[in-house]
Image 1 (cartoon, one colour):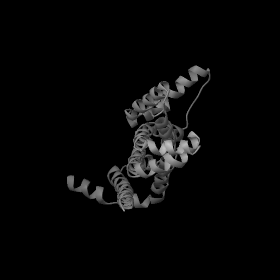
Image 2: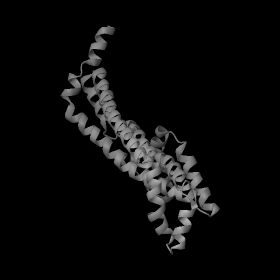
Image 3: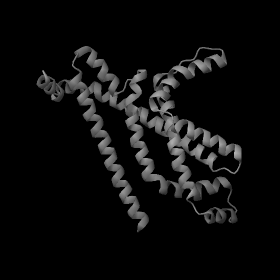
Image 4: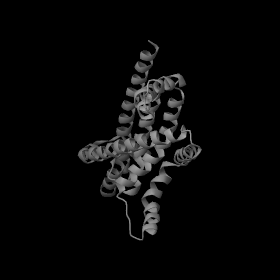
Length: 234
């Protein structure tokens, strides 16, 4: 019995038969990843700027954002955004509100990883010598010009390796979006499993496909990080 189950798990012919369905699901993972990564970076930068602001209320607001979403589990945030947040908004506005599963996934993952990106941005901003900022002010540059011409180029250079690693983690987090019926790879696998009643080869194929994508992405991140460090040290 065990040997038969093992043979079924390594026989990926069924997964190959449904390769177009599976690849379309994987493409949906990339769509969720791209949208949520954009949201995480934008929100993370905003929270980081709040954390390093001079005004105490801004710093408190930025810290609250970071501590709330960085410590929120992906699964809990996904379910809360999709099922609870529409109820709260609907009660406040006096109308029925429903989120599309794709939107819920982007909001949830974007918020969670914005907490991580906020800390990465903050560390990069605080590592910049104050003399650089003072030199910009001495040249008559506005705070916005200092941000985009002096601060951000240095921050990106300092945070790039860690930021790329967080992108890899974010892609791996997209594997749970099928919980709210986002038609990603795992959702397609569950649908085909319900039809074929052969979960072993389907889930094994999905695991191998995810592994290949994540391994390739992690390898590119390591290569980019090594070359970036060599450029900095050169």
